[in-house]
Amino acid sequence: MSSMKNIDRLYEEEDGKNKIEKGTLYLVSTPIGNLSDMTYRAVHVLSGVDFIAAEDTRNTPKLLMHYGIKKPLVSYFEHNKAQRGREIADRLLSGESCALVTDAGTPAISDPGEDLVKLCRSLNIPTVPVPGACAAITALTISALFTAKFSFEGFLTTAKGDRRARLEAIKHDDRTVIFYEAPHKLQDTLKDLLTHLGNRNIALCRELTKINEEVINTTLEEAVGYYETVRPRGEFVIVVEGYKQSDEDSFWAKMTEHEHVDFYINQGLSKMDAIKAAAKDRKIPKGELYKKLL
Ligand code: SAM
Image (tube, rainbow, N blue to C red; front, side, top):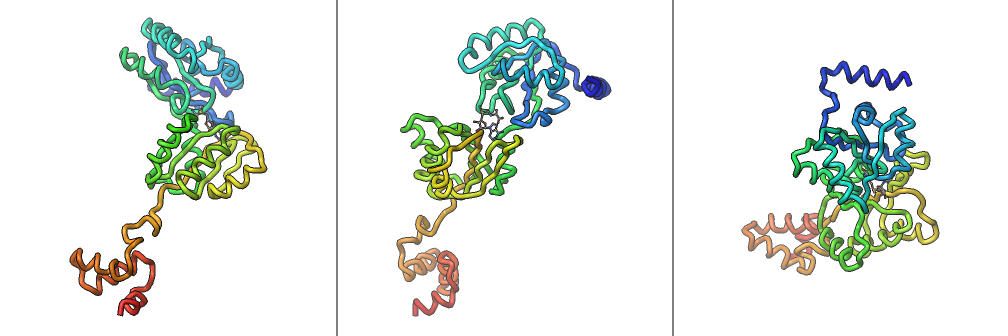
């Protein structure tokens, strides 16, 4: 593996900045599909630590083999994380170094990792991020929706009442919102999003960085209609446009044109400025509103 040797040399030359520290937990991001999305640093760290904690000990060996990395693996996943977390922390405290990887993407983002980081930090064990691919950010960047402000919801709970409450809580958030979903639950989730958030523009991002990568810009209504007959396949990120105040829920929606103008006059505006402001709200020319009021 001559390319591996080159990577190691690259890191040796970096003034010890990339030295693998003893007694340290490294959170190593791995590709979400395309194996070439592995970073040089991720390969270097996985090659250098004493052991690797992996969410899926059947999947991770394929990645390690691809990069010629041979390291002892321990499993760390949702159902053993309490007991295994303490064992990993003990090994770290005794001076070993560990890299945590999950099935794909960035550890601790909708997969195990958060608890291990908390435990290590509470024990003053150094924790070092090795950033890389994350499905949520990858989807957002390609969504063609507003990216400057966004929120991440991950997987919605399947408990009906809690799900409803969560969607109602975020209904008026104007930031773009990102959801993860499994293919067999996609249609139910799209329907719930439509019911609670209303019809909005979305980007359905499927199989990112894989052979069947697809990004569909559509609306919730159209997506629900589409998946009535088509079975969703692959992994999905749903990126949903944020809340936009519509004319129906604006403060003046139930006012007559006279009341609307009077509202602004009572706010201290001159009659002409009040007409101008009301016309702007109603998206009509001010001359048109003026004539109607005469
Ligand atoms: N930690 C991961 C990350 O950084 O993105 C997420 C892990 S979470 C258990 C798995 C979910 O991420 C999938 O159900 C899907 O919603 C999303 N996902 C992961 N890989 C994806 C891909 N290649 N394309 C689209 N969505 C993906």
